[in-house]
Image (cartoon, rainbow, N blue to C red; front, top):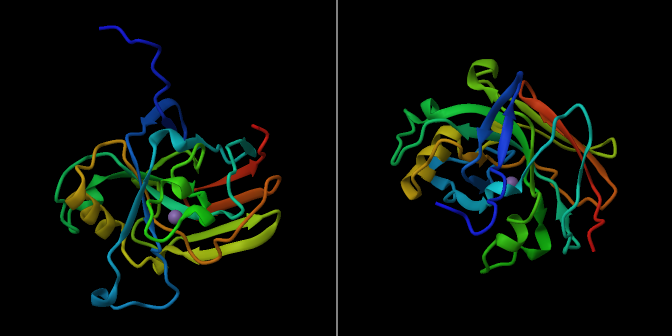
Length: 230
Ligand code: MN
């Protein structure tokens, strides 16, 4: 077999503390509007709102240095969403909520960058969500090294100003419920990443701003957006 041209690089994320081991990224699923500061009764929850980003939207953000992002801005409302990301290590269809956490290999911190003014009512979300470099993420930590079943705090600063400050206890759908729901719609595969939603305070930032965010016990990332591509 021959390729017409050289295939592009496989999107990967490194494994924290494993210099030569990489997680091959299959798909990126996102859940929108998944945080609430008030409790919502299970029967009153809106259905999970799902979108996808292309696997090659992943950009590794090592945390100990600021990485520069350079994508076509094309928006007047570029928004940061700091999120806990679950990495699937074992695939499946119709996974039960009870079994769902067995499918998680590990976690990382991700930014779900969003062109909010392109997320138009009754239109697909690709222009708003699925753009180049729209998913900066830290290295992955295996579940054995992440505090289990405990709320984790999430935060994000823009130029040293705190914008987001929440807890995974504010998630409307738990990670197990998200996995179960996604697996009723798609066959989940090892390599899938799930961006599990963002706490309040996801607001706009501008080219030149530096963003620093993290999830307690998982990692931190630092990114700066410079739109130099014309
Ligand atoms: Mn999001």
